Length: 176
Image (cartoon, rainbow, N blue to C red; front, side, top):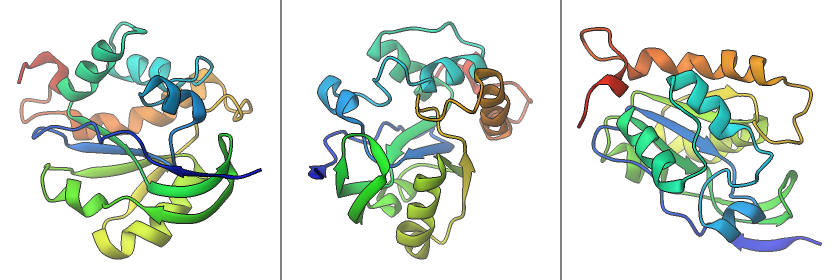
């Protein structure tokens, strides 16, 4: 049975965010733990840590700081929808987040989506307002078991060029 879910999490961003990564809607585990990609089998944090060459951490605060230090913003395409558990394919009656709000406040240079559903929803519901194309990345969900961890890391490495400063260093090596 579908449940009407309103997005409970704030966008994670700061004035240095150059990359925006968008999922669809927080899973029940993420809503319960009040943080993005909180299901223990979701590979998002393992992948991002590898791409950024950062130690993996379970700590919410460490994860937040890692993203912000590298200029990565994190949010979801949807503000509200009917959904069965965490099954993106069950999404009905989607209402988008106001992505333009974030784009007006942060120097976002590239937008990425985690998974094909997020990509389709962004293209249909957000792109007409933002006039910005999002680059789809594979889902890090445990449901996407066909994509190995190595393939996910290679796919997500595409964000690196947007994280570099004028000297060609990853933004992680600078403190804001």
